[in-house]
Length: 361
Image 1 (tube, rainbow, N blue to C red):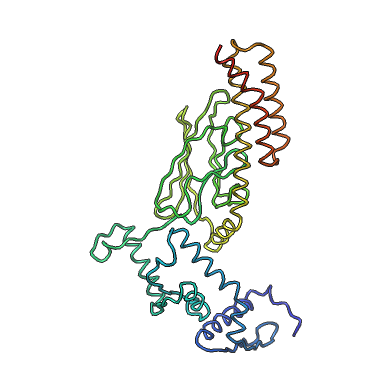
Image 2 (cartoon, rainbow, N blue to C red; image 1 turned 135 degrees about the vertical axis):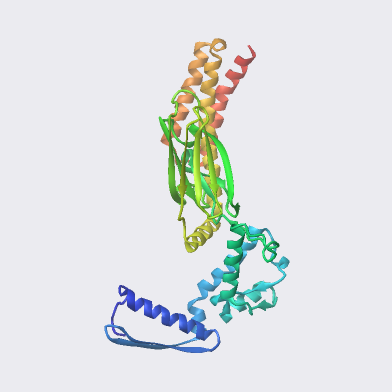
């Protein structure tokens, strides 16, 4: 109407947002509401009326996310909606009639309990959690237990940029998980190794959130090196990452704090659910790629072990095929799963008969 753009005025946007919040509350009990803001922007007063029906139409996508969250929670808890005994609503948005209607429909008409005071519930929960963390053993809290969980999986980057989770989503915290890796599974052998830590549910690390890294020096480029990686989340949600060189005993540790906001966590969970099939295909392709590479290196190692039993011609045949396969692999990193499988079958058809005969000599 006035051809004005107020999106860059933080004060005006804040005042409008507060007015909209009041309107939302009014529409929970009335079928229409008036929105008035004096001198909102450039001295212009803003006045409008919105009906509950119009409000529900504008927010239909947001209301739909409520049911998505409930479905996700039920899947995480591994229970069916028929196993829910009572539905207790708490919080401002739970008072919206459309939200209550959707919830009641989802739970097949089950009664909703709306009498709980949200502020009291939040304060009581915080008090109980504080008492548990402080080790309070009084009668008031001895029979209560609050469990905090990891909102997203935590892991590190391994060969090919794959996400290898050490702590899975919804694991109860505090928790501590340890896993040992061959250094070549993490990155190409170098004088040091960077343990790159990620948070998320996707198959590849470039689709997840990078949290930080731990660089472990003193890697032996010749002999096999095993690295023990430990993820430890304390009661405050702080992630401690440590890496230990199993050969030299050298270790390093760092703490990672302040990760994703609840909104970002939910977005990543929804994305992971939507792209689950794609991620499964990526994992399968990465596994086929790694299997081909492992097969080539294993065949080359076997040639070295059976040098006295293999003729020079046989050694040349196997080594040439392995080198050609590795060259193809490095030139076709984005190939499809079927191509990796085909290359592996070709490699095995050349190498396996010769190596099998040699091992029997």
